[in-house]
Amino acid sequence: MRWALVACAFSTAAAYLTPSRRRAASPIARPAREAAGDDDSAPELPDDVSEARARLIARTMGGGSLTEGSDTKAVQEGWAYETPLLEAGCVLLGGTEQDFGFGLRQQYFHKCVLLLTQHDDQFTRGVIVNRPSRREINGWTVWCGGDVEEGGVFAPLGRKESKGRPPALECLSTRDVEGARRVSKGLWTSTFESANKVVKAGAAEKTDFMCLCGYAGWAPKQLDGEVERSSWHVAAADGGSLVAELLAKEEDADAPLDDGLKTWASLMARIGKDAAPDGFDFDDGMLRAWIDARLDAPRMDVSALADAARRQTRQEAFMKTITGNNGAIKPGAVLACQHVTGSDFLLEKQYLHKALIQVIAVQQELVIACVLNRPTSRKISLRLSPESEKSKTVAFGGDVQVKSAAGGVVWLSRGPLGDKGERLPLGSVKGSSEGDADATHVISAKDVVVELQKASAFQADRVLAASGVVAFHVDELARMLGVGHLLPVPLDDAPLEECWALHSDDVSTPGMTPDGCWHAAFLAGVGAHASCAPPATPAELNGGLADEALTRFIKTFLA
Image 1 (cartoon, rainbow, N blue to C red):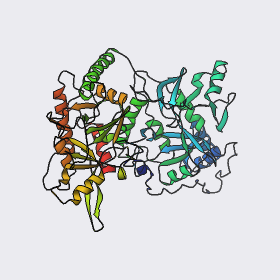
Image 2 (image 1 turned 90 degrees about the vertical axis):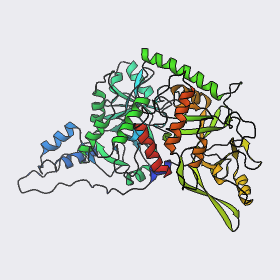
Image 3 (image 1 turned 45 degrees about the vertical axis):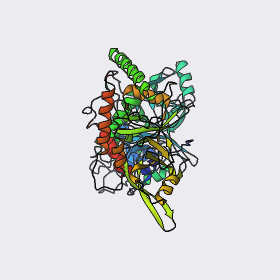
Image 4 (image 1 turned 90 degrees about the horizontal axis):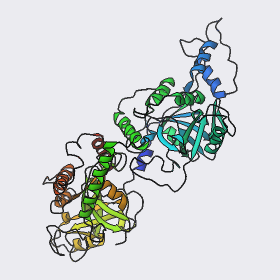
């Protein structure tokens, strides 16, 4: 079978667009008239309109005192106030009121401070300014400005990501240097080439610039919709003071990278919002994990070298158990999946943590597998005749849709379906022959319908319908074997029958839980590879952030 793969089967992106309660725009506060004799004169209008608004608002605060001193102090300390106006120079603060947060996807947006450098009828562009990193480009330490055109600079530690295009670099500065464009009062932006030229000429230092790699972008009116869904709090702020404050922070090379949460909380407090909202411990933890994996720099010491050696030994041993004499991975191999360290199965593809998968095809350098222990509430109907149909529970097989399969659903059977089905080379158990009744076969929906129409002793529970598959590049799969995220499971001990039972329409007989299927497979895999140091124990894999991420994924997308 030729496998044509496209986008995700169970769309997770739509969840980020779910409308939530609309946040009313806060009008600019207007000063109330005080008793005769108070200074209610309008402040002198500066050359920056946003600062003028800040002065007006400052005069209405602090016990109702309308004094020039109150607004001057506010401006000197770096002003900020909530505004309904989107414009270049304004700041977006990651929202806390939306129905769906950034814990499972795009963690870098969680409680971010994003400064718009362009906002017009054609395009809106902004950069995150509270995500420093320890990554370098051409001798410059870069900050993570966003996920667009970051060029693989922020690939997870131990992995390489080639985006095919050079990274987009932008340099913010509080100095008006040659080639710079004014964003707002006291803040300019330059291309990396212009900033580098100024530094080489001795007119500025690298520390005068915030060099940002990547950005966030919106089509016309797109950002307006996100603001209406409370994805962002919009603030007018003194961008020059904000950038200067962030650049002035001293970085301790031995301490964890700054997560930017204090900067976000400070600005939230300035605009009158809750700076410490409840219910975000998970999202905060996922942001911390993303920063450690994506923004930190690799460190080589004795323990890292020893760990690298163990991973290499494990990778070689595990690969031998799932490949043939020609070195190619054989379809039918069963693997226990678990998050052990780093970002795999934690920051993305959380459904693979404590999952059991079976390889169903190898297409050039792509390994295609199906998750076996992720039941859902979804059903698919098979029309047997104009008057009758049969429904079947659908499993979640992965986030990649098989375009060549009807409805994107892959069908597997334990044993052949009549004389139909493509038997997987490693689909048999206990070394039985080609006709093994328990061998995994890839079948089609049409084959299932034909067997159902026969009204014979067809056992529907021996058939599994899965929406989507998982796809790994061979090199990536090998790396995950070395880390311990993937563990080969002997077919003799793989709980395949128990996995099939998870998706049975007959719930009268309780069986193993999804976690129980993984646990049994994991122990079997560890026992079969006693010569290799196990990546972790079941106890070490219980109760952590990855478990909570899996629970949230299932509740959000599969329940």
